[in-house]
Length: 233
Image (cartoon, rainbow, N blue to C red):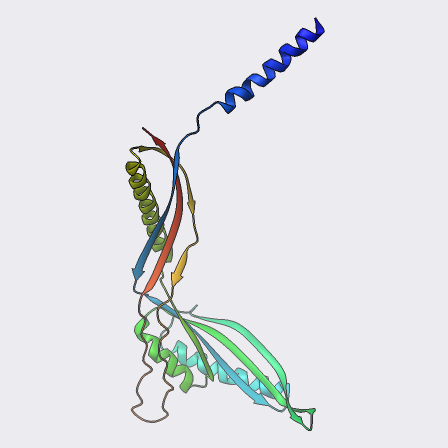
């Protein structure tokens, strides 16, 4: 009796596994969707810095503070937003010369760098020229952006999903099938192709100097998705 019961239990436990193995596979299709949106930028960020050198740390720091204060005052006079200027970093370090293979102290250098946000692109040449004329010693890369970036990113994502669905429909149709339902949508990496770097001409210290030429170009917002859909006859 015990042997028969044991065999029955084994058969009962194996039945679901056998049934599961015999279930037909559900046909699916996996497609990639892409979208690219081009937009003219309406905002720019530029890195500016002031470097000063002196024999002592105190002198270098004091000279830097005075020069940076003058730069920021001139920039604010252009009508930039109150939060448009943001400190990025401050560094005070010694400098050395090498004489006969030995380090010889030369003095100290102080460097204060700021990021300037420009909400009106037509002001960008004036911002650069004003900063340099008032004491900025370094002008770094310019980054263009969109103030309403999120809306554009969502639009690109929506278009990428539509592209993936259209590809899935085409693939299903080619196989004589149709889409039963979408199983998963996985967002890929979002990217941006920056516009060409603008040409930045040095400001001439003479009357009638030509303003710094700036070309904003276009920003490309990209989105990609992977769509998996179930097929049916």
